[in-house]
Length: 55
Picture 1: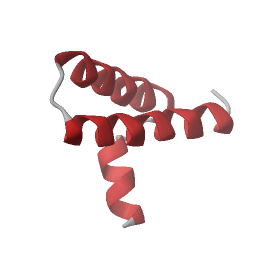
Picture 2 (picture 1 turned 90 degrees about the vertical axis):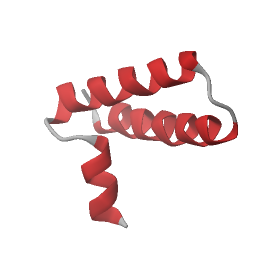
Picture 3 (picture 1 turned 180 degrees about the horizontal axis):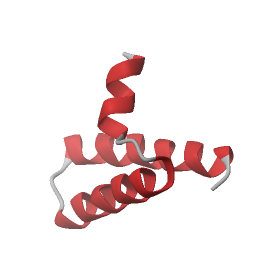
Picture 4 (picture 1 turned 180 degrees about the vertical axis):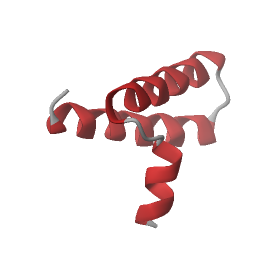
């Protein structure tokens, strides 16, 4: 997976997290889980840990 694809996953993750804050939806939660799984599969790291390092 290219760096641009990983950046796209991260942006989708951020957008989905914002949408979940506004409204709880099972479909959004499933999408969030899928994004986290794909990111872990490609990088070997979790999104949550990577975001904690940044902030």
